[in-house]
Amino acid sequence: MARTAVPGRLGQEGAGTGLRWRVATLVERRAENATASTLVLDVAGWPGHLAGQHVDVRLTAEDGYSAQRSYSLASAPGGQYVEITVQRVADGEVSPYLVDQLAVGDPVELRGPVGGWFVWQPGGTRPVLLIGGGSGVVPLMAMIRARRETADSTPFRLLHSVRSPAEGYYAAELTSGDPGLATDFLYTRTSPDGWPRRPGRIRQEDITAFAWPPQTEPMCYVCGPTGFVETTANLLVDLGHDPDRIRTERFGPSGG
Amino acid sequence: MGVVSPGFHGRPRESSRRLPPGQYETHDFPVLSAGPTPRIDREDWEFTVTTETGDRHSWNWAELTSLPSESPTLDLHCVTKWSKFDTSWQGVSLDVLLTGVETAADFVMVSSYGGYTTNLPLEDLLDGQAWIAYGYEGDDIPPEHGGPARLLVPHLYFWKSAKWVHGMRLLTGDEPGFWESLGYHDYGDPWREQRYQGD
Image (cartoon, rainbow over all chains, first blue to last red; front, side):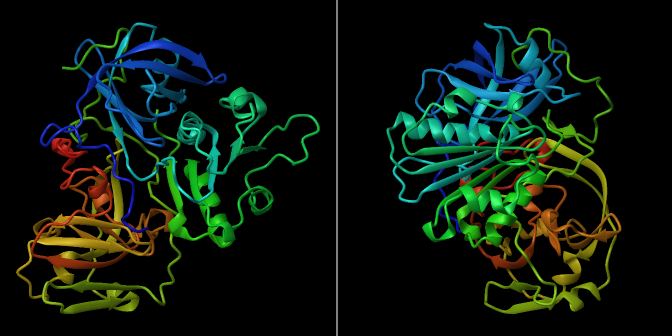
């Protein structure tokens, strides 16, 4: 893990100012599946971001109590609005409000972008392998969108593991046929009728069947729940991928 | 006070004196790492302190675990907002490890197997504030949580508590580590909410 990462946008707003909290207004909400929605936010003075970065969201109650959580950005850099995709966590404090309650026109506070490691920028030379578990596909989607927006020709492959077809994300967009992007899905509980793969968690043969072989030296981005990322990153190392080319982002079962 | 989000009530206001600003309590133990979990054989494990003059002090696994150990119970605060209370560890205080080390350095760069680094003032590792831990909740530290051995500096955000710790360089000047060079705060005091540069 050499310290040669893409510089983050953090701290570039001038010495001493740091990352300011900004007021974001909900412009639109799109349901992705039964438990997750994409929030389209208008953020005054948004400084821009890199695909893969996240933001901190802060909610404040009338008595001044506040709660913060981090969410990956789903939108490509450079758009008019900023999008996050939030999965409702059972018993969560912040996510149920964002998914179910925040109304168009309502304000939330947000600061970022945060994180300069789990990012992809157009213009690289390595093929890119994206492996996401559940809502872990969100920052990977930002990378796919960044690639499309810039008409970048880097070969991309996305392997997305979800419990069932009903629990997919961005399904129509992911199968719309971006040139140079191959997408495949793993179902852990329920597969569509006639799906060739038996339902189950990610296995080595899933990766050998679909991923770039290690000899092509892809950049690998793995995001999802802890167990999924731990398993997948270990499988990639077992297959001969250099750990220095595997970047991970994990979220625990907590969050919320 | 921030902008009020209409209809947001939040969780019941429990006694939160142990919770730094912007944090919430979790009972899980989430994992945060920038890459795969490195594979480290205890037979080959080594921890080396290198002083600013190049003197090296090394401990292998048997040497580390034969030193006097402590069993602190600690609250952990991760910059990603979760805090976990009352975790129990076993490890060797840095006071013990640094006892025979001659140095005039003020800063430390901690390094890990796998290439991770993080920087701290030396004084934050002394006086009972930091350990090289090799036990968690009465067992070995699981690899994804930094085993076989990790640094513990619980009064700073948890990214300073380097997993898979391998060594420390004592430095006369401060240098940024891995996350510190990617926009995270140089010091990382959770009670002052020093998450990012400029906080």
